[in-house]
Amino acid sequence: MTQSPPAGQAPTAEPAGSTAVQRQRVLRRPSSLVQGLVGSLLLVVGSLGVGWLPGSSPLRQNALIIPMRFTTVGVIVSVVLLAVGGMLLVRAWLRLGQQVRDWGSDDARRSVLRAIVLWGVPMYATIPLFSRDVYSYIAQGLVMVNGLDPYHDGVSSIEGFFQRGADQLWSESPPPYGPLFLWIEQAIVGATGANLEWSVVLFRLTSLVGIVLCLWAVPRLASLHGIDPTRALWLSVANPLFLTNFIAAAHNDALMIGLAVAGIYLTAVRRPILGILLITASVGVKPITIVFLPFIGLMWAGRGASWPRRLGYCAITGAIALAVLAVAGVLNGLGFGWIGALSTTGNVWIWYAPVGLLGLMVATALNAFGLDGWGVASMVHTVGKLAGFAVVGWLFLVGNHEKLVRRMTLAMAAIVLFNPMIQAWYVVWLLPLFAVTGVRDDWQVRTLFLVTAFLMIYAISDQLDVFPYLNVDLNVARQLAALIGVGFALYLIFVDPRTSHLFRKKFWDASRPLTI
Image (cartoon, rainbow, N blue to C red; front, side):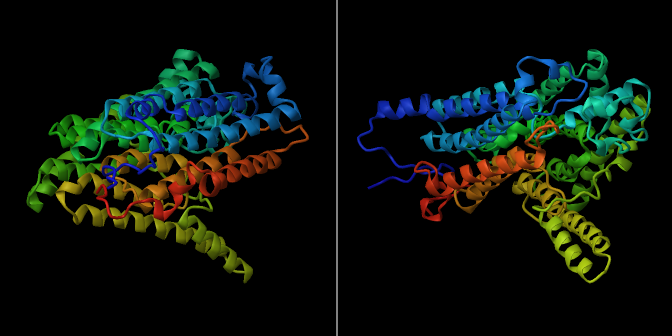
């Protein structure tokens, strides 16, 4: 009689004639580790030709970069390497989940940690990929260094800002970041003298702090919920979206979510003041995590607390956070300017976000009749955001105390899902939170597989820096990358003998217990 695998583990077919020693070797040296390393190294080489490199960077004169970036063949090779490398990481991640036989073993934990290191470390050598926000961080740091208020003075106030790589979106727009991250920007730019390359290195080290916090907090928080900690790490920190967005792209979201997850864990183990301070620091990086504070108040109040007690502790939680942020505002002289900056990306939308797609459909239909379609679409976007906050309010009021972390996870998911703009790193916010509260081995994990593949395809085909004076223009490069990405994904889903069954419903054993 075949024994079902433990809850939370993907079932895998046992190779015929395998022995215990062979199974142990598969676990200790899974081929997926090497495959992911190759994918990561391909990203490094591909970034030389199509990674984001400012016009003022001396790297443009580097002997290795010139043939990759300024020749048609070099750009094509770079696009191919980038696309194949990104999709190889997706496959390696899927295969690692299959090759781990026992999530509770020390070998499983070592394999996942090795994967994170082997796949992540090479990305520190890439020219920034999938986003150029890191150059906006540098420009905003220059604004601070020059004694200006970034909430009122856009990066266009800095001479030659465009040659420094910052997106024109930020030319007159205030940064949607809190006071802590503005200090970090100022400190890094001041320490490097605004050197672009060294600034990128230090911003990546800042992201490393957030990654380390996730490595520390995710297993512990998962254990509190009865979830296998190693599987939680595989689903979240080892996920290629997590590594590429937080290392290759150097997004400050790594620090934001790391502080938040650590704060949630500390509050859960009855260290609420320290937990609140960490979550407040997270708000000081990106204010979106303020959505966690009311749930932290409920957690602090304790199981079975009356509503007056719950509201009282929520008020105390809010007061502590407000006091810390007020002191930060006084010290940097910027006050609560970040509140007004929260609307910076308010009019931005994207076609694959449900609310963004709905707005596009409404605008297209109304414009066909000569009406103000985009005006109505803007209203649709606003209603979508309000719906997200309504879900947050409902989750605050309704639900079991034991599922508070899951409730705050769903609250953040509602904010993301009902936003007309969903960036890949928005989804990455949710990975550690869902991983520690449980991702079932059914449609839930299949959805995660598909979302990971889709967002990787979008990243490798959208965020390319292509030299404009070549036979291959930006659109052609994007189409080539998309073709490779989609083709690779279709192979993984329908053809690959190792991974295709992961995407089929019949693969999952519905009779065995599932992780809550």
